[in-house]
Image (cartoon, rainbow, N blue to C red; front, side, top):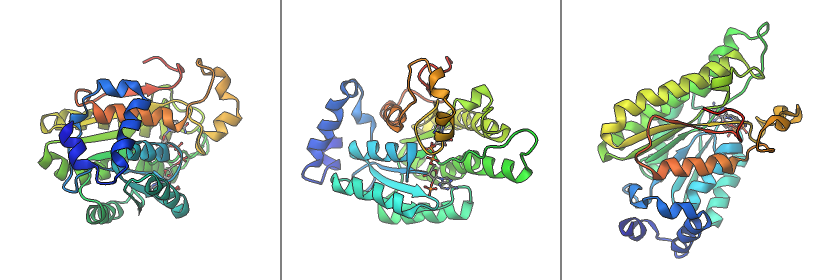
Length: 282
Ligand code: NDP
């Protein structure tokens, strides 16, 4: 832990920020922060895909609060990504905005190369980017299916493959994939493609976890229930919240805190953690 503190906090207030972060959630004190190892640039470095808004934004901010340097990926909304980066800078952290369509291999490769030049090699990958194209059984097209699988599932494969050489060489890494309750309950309100993509990401999680455990790289998934974001809004408007046992929809921070747990615990791998307010017991 001392090595972590000495090496990672060059900003004068960062040391205080670190303690503020761990004391604001008491359970952090129980976790071994020595699990977090350094990149060449002294701070752990994370890439959060789809970090410009919604759940990804909450994850990017929470990681930065912990002293992690963050690459905030986005596809279109440059201004929203820039505002996440500015918020991290204002708080004394390190962050860059990284444009790329993560469903396209060449875009992923050039994004990773740019991040490595700007921040250093990636120690923590959060595959969060996703789309929900709402289509019924009769109107879903091949295009809808392909796009849904490409953005929600193939992107995780492309990003993971791109960061693995560094993680394996350092014998430390964290990959966290954002799944969905829809993987288990069929995603009736979105599409069969979305349900298939999210079930796929949970299988991909286990397949990578098995192969990477000996290299010190853990791979896990988080399966949110209904979360208050732009993607969740149509379901919230439809009154789904009334059926959530804890009596509220989730927040991005509910998911971000689970991601922090997985970053800091090296003995959990191959798991999917359900964060859904009791909507489904798994
Ligand atoms: P939002 O629609 O609010 O945000 C989606 C994010 O993904 C944006 O940052 C967007 O970038 C980015 N994105 C979309 N397509 C691409 C792409 N091709 N390349 C790069 N970035 C892309 O979604 P949420 O925050 O709600 O969802 C985040 C994750 O959580 C998704 O995987 C979703 O499936 C999952 N989830 C969400 C639930 C919910 O209720 N909200 C429930 C269960 C799972 P840009 O801003 O540039 O468009």
